Image 1 (cartoon, rainbow, N blue to C red):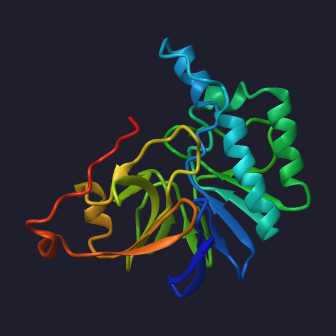
Image 2 (cartoon, rainbow, N blue to C red; image 1 turned 30 degrees about the vertical axis):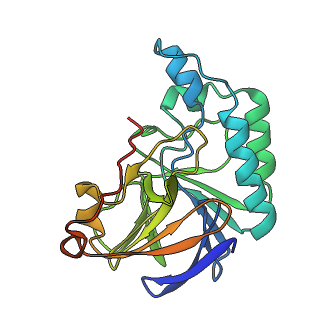
Length: 230
């Protein structure tokens, strides 16, 4: 199962196994937390030298989703870049590839806490603080109902940690789409406060729905192990 269909805020949506969200009625493809340029940002700040392949890996997956869904609009829900400097310092070939992917469609960058500045002029698309158009799209969950990213939700299934969508009555939180992103367990208090009950949809080879039960019903059971990115 490459996607799982569900309803949120009176809209029929598809959670893709890749971690992208597809809105068929609008033909919008929505992704969160690409964090392009993370390896460069870490090296620039004196951290570990990571293999500089995360941009290509992330864009390969995004390009595959664009080819599969043929969206009219692509929306990045904030933290499209690991910081503003990473957005400005993307190699020319990466900028050219993004322009090719954006050709013939609308491309929107919602600003996040990692990339609050307007999008670099070398890149396609338009930067917005948030978007209210049928659904409310923003980086971090706020006034409900809304669709957001930021928290990088994860779930542990059969001993494996998996990125997941977190679907509640008031908030829909997308997994991080970027290749070098970590995550936060869905039973962390920050996520429990936003989605106390609902549905987690794990990513990977297939999109698998898992009920999110009230915390009281989980008393005495093993907690999901948190995995943090920062």
